[in-house]
Amino acid sequence: MTHLWKLDLIRRKMADLQLDSFLLSDLHVIRWLSGFSGSSARVLLSQDRAVLFTDFRYREQVAEEVDSMECSIIDGGFLNAFAESGVPGPERLGIENDVVSVGEFERLRARFDRLAIVPVSGFFDEFRMIKDAAELGALRQAARITEQTLEKIVPMISPEVTELDIAAEISYWHRRFGAERDSFEPIVASGPRSAMPHARPQPEKIREGSLIVIDMGCVCNGYASDQTRTFALGKIPDEAAKIYSIVRDAQQLGLDSIRCGMAAKELDAIVRNAIASHGYGEAFGHSLGHGVGVEVHELPRVSSASEDYLHPTTVFTVEPGIYLPGRFGVRIEDTVVLHESGPEPLQRYTKQLVQL
Picture 1 (tube, rainbow, N blue to C red):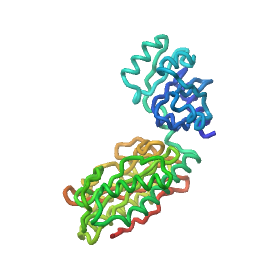
Picture 2 (picture 1 turned 90 degrees about the vertical axis):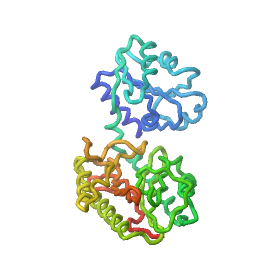
Picture 3 (picture 1 turned 180 degrees about the vertical axis):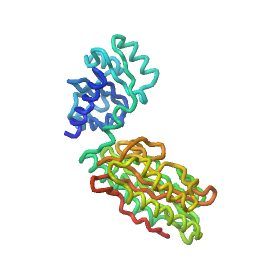
Picture 4 (picture 1 turned 180 degrees about the horizontal axis):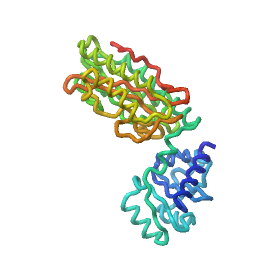
């Protein structure tokens, strides 16, 4: 049922844009709309039909995962299957402008010369931003798995292990606890490398007296988690402890300030101004957060340039940070579900500084 209401909304928007049919190519959108998790698929929608095309490798999988669409196992290219299906038409075919390559567009235009092919940007974003009960359940489950994994790996941190060791354990325990995969490559960054927001783990042992930023997430039932905590190995400099407190307080201020209907950029400004008031405004260079769903980065954008608003059942991160190049960095991140009554953080792991 969760997929049927999505089809209904999409068809209404297609009618508003005078689109007779729509070709979906983005595998994330296809999973969101149909439940299909294979690596090769296209979907053709019209007002009265929805057909998912995939190949022989997924014959049994698509039968198990998809119950809201016709499923067609193709032998050959997608274009031949489209032509034989009779779905495209009669006049205007929508495509995902930000997904379809120039080459694929040209092949479509040559094969279906009777159609007006209409590139559309962000067609599904407004629907994906609002989560239903099943989606929220999957997001909560993914968050629980990441929390369980974090509890497993934190006691492993010592001067005897490397960043890569911890990253490998994260991926291992995510799967042991039931995740499909990581939602992104784990970030484990210690010492001066903790000042690199997207540092790649290195085969370098974690040193005493350093901060360690661990940013991690998994995918469960198609939906992602995203969580960051910063830890200390041994005694850290007083300034590092001070920076940690500033980031923790700013992150909590962000959580306390969220309300339904507010502009995302307003929330970003509240937290950014709090950090700037301590003299570290230039050290917080990235956005405050981002939406989370079938992708770990989607709408709403929570940044100074965002035009999005925070509505009930939107799911997004709150993740301020301060980064002092060559010295250390701190980031703390929760993913929240916004309800009419306020935000529900999906993470429960302590935000007090854990010294190992």
